[in-house]
Length: 408
Length: 205
Image 1: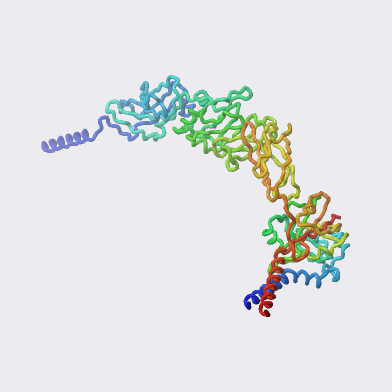
Image 2: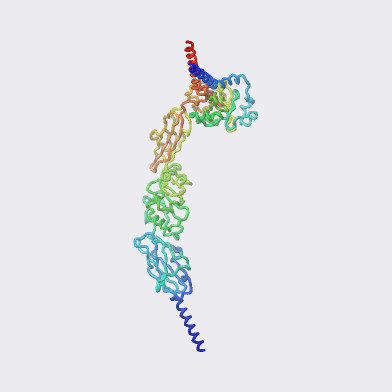
């Protein structure tokens, strides 16, 4: 009996020792100690703009298991003071710890804030697996107002209200209905909602005023090569206050826009042009020349002909060239109608009409006119008969002269 | 001396052969197929042609082209027309004239009010393969009032000959557009040469 008692005692202490040796410092029975992470201001869907205080609540399954301290590592895209920020305060209420970050000052900030949870005693990180990694991150934009940060130069106008997207009303920067508006020049409205949270996009928006081509009437667009997200995006573009009496031609970076611009329409009443832009750089609305005479690839017998047409900007400068020879500036009447008599050379004549105004140069319009030199020849070339007769004459001469010399 | 004589004979024979190749066909045809001495092979009478509104109204004629063709019963011309043939590029229009009469590029079409200019061969290069080598060989046989019919997009346009004359190759006045519903036929003259042009003018009826 005594031996049995001693054996039981030995086994008890062995089990106790094993238990002590394998038990954690504070025995956490759960593998996912964090029950939830909730970012402050649920109305914003966990995304913040321009506030001075943002908070995050981290609720543990059992607070008695830990003495947690929360810190944050903030991945600001641009911040002279560095990219790491601890929570300004951490308070505990039962199982819930609230970490608060104060975003003070007028510094413009944007970035993805990542939450780390660390046990205050052991300094061991507590894995955030229960909620998933996405819950540990939040995009923050602070004081990022694209107009006040980077004003659009030359855009002030009392004629139209500014429709540029107000970021203070954006609830989710992953899906933004984005409009860039220059009331004096034009408007870009992106046709699909954009995720603006990428570093390059935020950087581009911070300096958007330098990217917007709005310094000249009749031209509008985005030129910054860093704005890949917006440059490649389809958008509806409007250009205001054009001088045209009819739909102008559209140029893309000064050249053909046929593969870039579609759905081109012109509001004659408001003199504004609207188009669908497939890709961004600078679009411009340029004068358009329409020729009514001469017809292309026509034939004439006359020494002169009259070039007739119209341009949709009566103030435009119209010039006529014949075979690249400048025929001078053409007088354009108040309706944009013009005509110019030119002298043709024999054969093919290339007649080119150019137009230009304060916006830029329009596309050249060319016509080829052939001035006939002779009527079509539909018979055998006469020289063949001449050659045949000459051959006969020469042959006869050879025959006769050889006979004469033989007889002598 | 014998070589010189032989060479002389070769030259004479070659010259005679070439002259024959150029002139024999058109002038033999002019002798044996003179429309003024032969009945026309185009069977419909003139009244029926003049009354026809569309090419389908003339089933008795195997019209060369209802889309764009020319019919001149008096000189047995029944040929398709190739539209918009550039009259300044011989290499190209000689190719077009193998299968059709040429419509001078820039001249009017039948449904316009201007001057429609057609040109065709009076003779062709020796050895050339062409369906219409002498289509206008008898243009000089047309007289005032003779009927010329143009089929265009199945419609019938009738013209009456007004004048016929021989002009210099550079007399461009005959193709000038006077907006008078005219038809102008042009061919080289005399046959076998391209020294002059035989020009027949007709007025739309």
